[in-house]
Image (tube, rainbow, N blue to C red; front, side):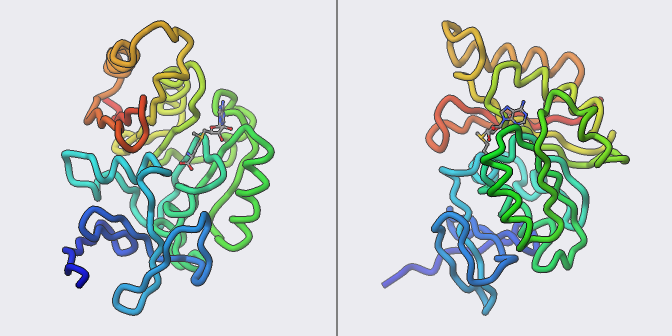
Length: 234
Ligand SMILES: C[S@@+](CC[C@H](N)C(=O)[O-])C[C@H]1O[C@@H](n2cnc3c(N)ncnc32)[C@H](O)[C@@H]1O
């Protein structure tokens, strides 16, 4: 017989059931990547897989309150390195909800046209999601979409210079009381001979020069060679 697992809401649209994360499906009946759909109290949720989403892995791993890693529902956020939209879709569930009933705005930037195709398709069913074909390093071309600073900025670009790209974006787009989350892939940095530990230590040193480092979350086991850093502006 299945055990009754403890259910803990992390927001009004994200819940933790035991060690499984679920988000209220903003597009009922539709799974994005074959994830399970399940009703909790009559409301359809999608399983948010921590092996496919570094944000989900961080929500499970943080030593602090996981709710603090999520943006405020209905706010405007910036996501750099949106990929094919796996994490973006769950973030949209939380931030916007069905028909964008929460009035959120999710600016999702990616360099790859093939990712933009998937994101554009996703955005057709998910109002509030704004896909942008752009380079995270060249925000003069798309920064106009964000006339005001945001309270939540996430970066997952997996390319060399991740820390520098992130600190520039934080300076330009993150508000004083907002949080920035950097997913760092050690293997993407140029100095491949450097150990993972050295890459993370160097990232901590660089981030700490100008930002308050709130937490360093090790994602090994969900995403090897990855860490997620949570920062605030000083
Ligand atoms: C690891 S994938 C992102 C996965 C996604 N965050 C998720 O959780 O579903 C990294 C993405 O960053 C994009 N990327 C790499 N360099 C970039 C840059 N300079 N600007 C914008 N996107 C970039 C790649 O095209 C790729 O889609």
